[in-house]
Image (cartoon, rainbow over all chains, first blue to last red; front, side):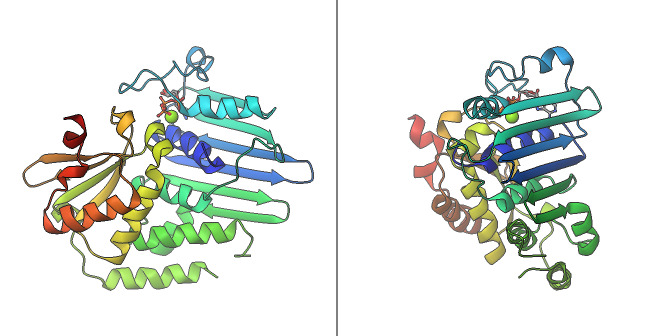
Length: 180
Length: 122
Ligand SMILES: Nc1ncnc2c1ncn2[C@@H]1O[C@H](COP(=O)(O)OP(=O)(O)OP(=O)(O)O)[C@@H](O)[C@H]1O
Ligand SMILES: [Mg+2]
């Protein structure tokens, strides 16, 4: 996996497939503390405790097209490899929260990748899910909320190609601190 | 610099455009976006499709699906013809091939046989 966006999109996809209505993605980089925190929280169908205990095992999946599920185990291996930590908490019918904490400057941590594209791809196929992205890096604070975007679009679909491409650029500028 | 003001202008523009309704579009283009697809390069493929569709009008909607069960052939793009209910499965798709699928299959009803799964499984 070449970038962090790829790991995060896996977790976001899991939330999407769990019939969530609201998905919050929180990416926080604290260069001073050398800490990278990635949090994905959803209000989807959640998991039973017993299932959750084995979720980082690639042989645990509810998908029917193949016998292994890779999304969570990829993120777990990254955390293991970099002395990070992965915590997943879930409650059936309430939702799931996935928290990965990693040492930011560890040399095995891939670059952030294209976060705008990551959000765009999630929104593209799921215009009815509300996504929130909160990005914080030292003094950059960027909040993106599809609810706010939809209010402005008022009737125009959020997944029109032109709008999607604009959102991608808007997010990528925002996380660089350029929209402030 | 992009500001939310731009979005208001884009809204005005979108409202003026007379577009085909999604249900009237002949094709549905589906990109496999499970781990297997993403790892194999489905992200740039979907990105290329969105970019090309914003540049030119095509009689199709683009959607995503999870794992199609043919992980070794990812990235996969399936084209559903909504009129005759046939499905064409394109495999090992790249951004360039994705645009070619739009320009040939979607626009001119010409299936690119060399890129389909039947051509690989023979
Ligand atoms: N946010 C979530 N809410 C509910 N269930 C989840 C969530 N995340 C993961 N799961 C469950 O955990 C299983 C394992 O997830 P994982 O991402 O490792 O594999 P997968 O999604 O099944 O397949 P892949 O990611 O390889 O496409 C899923 O099949 C699903 O049942
Ligand atoms: Mg998954």
